[in-house]
Image 1 (cartoon, rainbow, N blue to C red):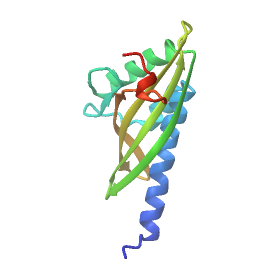
Image 2: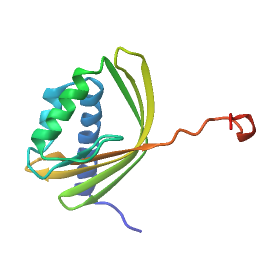
Image 3: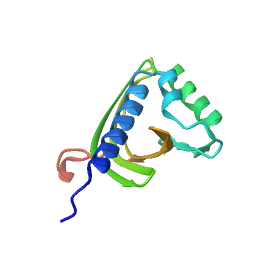
Amino acid sequence: MNEKTDSENSAEAAVLDANQEFYAAVQSLDMAAMNRIWLHQDWVFCAHPGWRGITGWKEIQESWEGIFSSTRRLKIQVHNLTLQLCGPIAWVTCLEEITSDSGQGLGAALAQATNIYMKVGKSWKLVHHHASPVPVVPNYPESERVQ
């Protein structure tokens, strides 16, 4: 039996808190919080659903500013969350259920996300966010779908 140490449990809780802070910043369209969450390096990486990957904090910051300025409301429900801790690196995988209002109608999407965090001092900083679109499968029998 592989029991976790108090230190591992504490680190896992801190990573989960950092991940929750990330999604809270996204949902509240809070650029100041996003600035606190991300590590400000030229090698950090972000891939928004349906976008090409972006490398470097400055470009990532600009992408979030663009998303936030064109969005009135954003809600992300996180499902199927898993966490792996490996020393000063941790990654979280989850399914994002996204609903948004851009002022031109509501949008809905699913994305499979991986968030990678690095321990810097006493904080866990986001260094990689990759969210890929997931096809939405209707919740009714195939025989009732339009073909």
